[in-house]
Length: 293
Image (tube, rainbow, N blue to C red; front, side, top):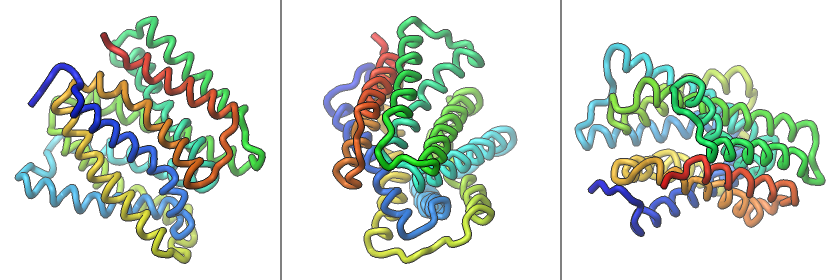
């Protein structure tokens, strides 16, 4: 049942989803100890794709379209695959607390891109959000942990590239797919068509796909594939069907908060003053950029 505001049920739903999304970053670090990072993302997409296809068949939803929609679905899947190749590879080198903040500059890429290419003018409030995000990015870069090295810098750059690709993917969907197909199909296109992209990236970049995974690494892979990539995104699509998407997006600032919290609790990562300042600025930026009266 659609509503024009986010009630308590909707808030609890988005709270759980953002908590799960935040926990995904330490989970990636755990899995990277047993599998190569891009290959992990490949396995994740394969498992989630099988579940997504099964779900579509169960609800009797057409799996694929024809013509231009199929082409745009393929383009979205390629972008999605590249995004996660950079995201997972970057997580091999940098801390999960840094990664989750860098990834969440994506909403600002979307805001700036919509202003430039989709005719959605930026209000003074949204400009403020963009400046806050940039300030947060600079703060995180300067708030280096004591063990920072060149490889962590490479990981940071990979996460920023992933965030930019995520933003470009969102803009592409808004331009060519939004309102033209069921959201589950957009979701499925991203998963299915990312599989060959991730496989090729892993084939050419990684030499050893499987290291010595233990039970915790396998469980973490299952968590990322089933709970995050399938169930949480299905729940998200259900929420955006029932509630105004702009009002839900305001709450996504909670994801980097939970991500940093879990990084400290699970990975025992060093949380510097610069990282905390960057987290606050990025979260504030996400909130004011998406805020609507």
